[in-house]
Figure (cartoon, rainbow, N blue to C red):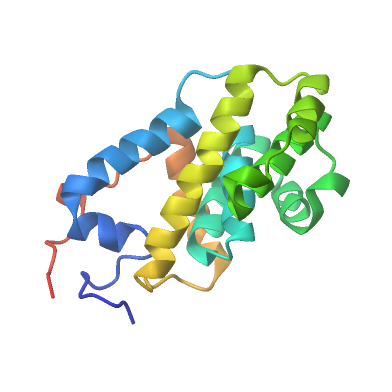
Length: 187
């Protein structure tokens, strides 16, 4: 049960965003820029970074939603599972592995990223912009994950309930807007 009174039936981050539309809009805008905006990293790669960080933070809602979006982009649900389990052994590019290593260090704390992590990413072909965006995605998802779990929001436990949402987000973006959901209720 959420720590504050949220509209019923709105899972994960949706409930708090409907509760606080003032913060929902900039958070959605940030997610759209980071995960869907112009970039040399594909939307799938960026979603995979978000999924991995959310998995490391044990945020069920976020890792499941973003995992579905990543699976949609890669057309490979098994890849998402392998990355969450052990990205170093997953069948993906060395560049993505090096960026996931950086994201994992950011998840633990920004000062855990070392010059060796950056050198590995550069050797694998990552640009400064890609390294920057990886750090920012990881930091933002630590915030999003803590927002969801810090309010003890509700989330469906059946991963199948997220597949349609993942496809919709992949195709339409992040657009949780209060007018699309029931009226908010405050404690």
